[in-house]
Length: 83
Image: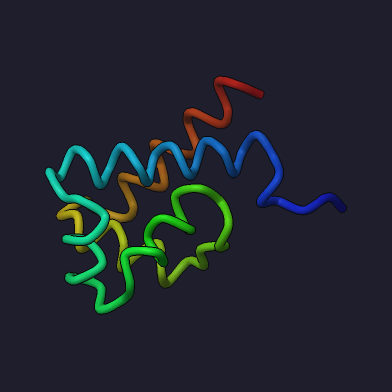
């Protein structure tokens, strides 16, 4: 099995995370403050340098005032369209 972080599907996830943060009107620093992490953590997640687990996905979306279930569905549907 290949590494998911280097897959087209993970690129879709990262793009959705970036769009979610930007749509919330948050900078990386602002989101980092809300999550009690460093701004470099947010940057590394968005660039794919750091892998995001499901719990962190929930925290990320929630901090951006986005329903994690709706966000996951949007990612899923985008992946299905591009498959």
